[in-house]
Length: 561
Image (cartoon, rainbow, N blue to C red; front, side, top):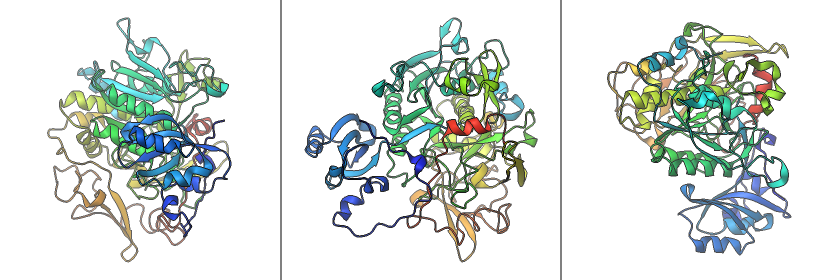
């Protein structure tokens, strides 16, 4: 029987690695695997230091392991291993790290021209025609919205779900049963079918890679296989973008997480990877008021991580606010500054026909016919993914690093109030949101400004920077990963539009100090993330309370609370 380790049960973790007989092996086992009973088997992702050879797999089988799938882009494999043999397998000098095959789920009005500028881009011919986007989700339904001139733009389909255990009899089909993937696809590439509900790039081709089942659940292994498939199909289908409106909790550095290593492989292959930040911004279980809740793989510094804004049902961005549920940075373990930017994600109307799981659970969210309203960072992510396709049309030859930096530099910096308060109409609980870099990143996506750039950033590393707090000065500084000069670093100044906006001090380090909106008197940074009550780092770790997207949607889909 399969055993899946669920991260949603891991909250407020604190641990220190103590000396044991097999310490070296234990250091290569994720924290969850170190506390398993000796009986039974576990499905795990084993990463090797080099691409494993048949001899390496043969060595693994001597411990009782069964290789279920090879994952060459992360130098690893999905295996079933007896719990009693995990330490032995970890002791193999060629093994880098072993983690559970963790479970993840989908991370859950119309996108208006005045808000992000997609209609303007479409009007000048930037519609995504001939460009492929890989949507790794719950599948995509065969709807008229995904046709052009009688021809389907779903040019490739594959399901990785399967029917094992009988939980999803339709798992071998790439067709959507849950509804989430179809909704995401409509936001990104739907043509509206004669309605006002068209997506950002209504002529883009869809590569439908299904990894979530009828209930919106999947595992690391399935997503990694789908990412590897997208990489292999990149040239055949002109895949420029991968959309990942899904996630799970973070329990180790992105440098060890196999899901993060997979998105990095796609990024290095030249694909722009756009990922949902998560919907845990209300989570105060660790006393951080939702800070430090970015989910994986959105915690990876390479990818574009997207938070959700509320357009408040207007076409004017000046009244936009950050949603209370949008996950906030910095990331666990690595303190990466995330999200990178935000986009409209609240009460977004898109394709989701009757009969699917989400429709049956939330029938009141139907707007008309096959159109349905959902909220979440899942809905904001395809807006940015569509914008990445528009950028590739506007600037032929632009790289994914340039797309990320350009989006952040042209993002609207002054849309949001210093703070805002929303009240959940169901619970009556009030939530205060602050306009800080860990909530809104570089600002709100602005496609028209992106389209109007007269020069591009240099083609240099655009990894999101590390946020470091100085207890002596009370100042947070941003520095490049491993000291590298990132696009927005001190040695690369490429115009007046500073990526992080006018509120930061631009110099040898980007300084976000006591005078900004979330300084010493706000529930952020000094008092929360790096305050006296939270020891940040490996010695004391609080994990994201995975609050899965499907569950969040049921709460917030009627509007930001």
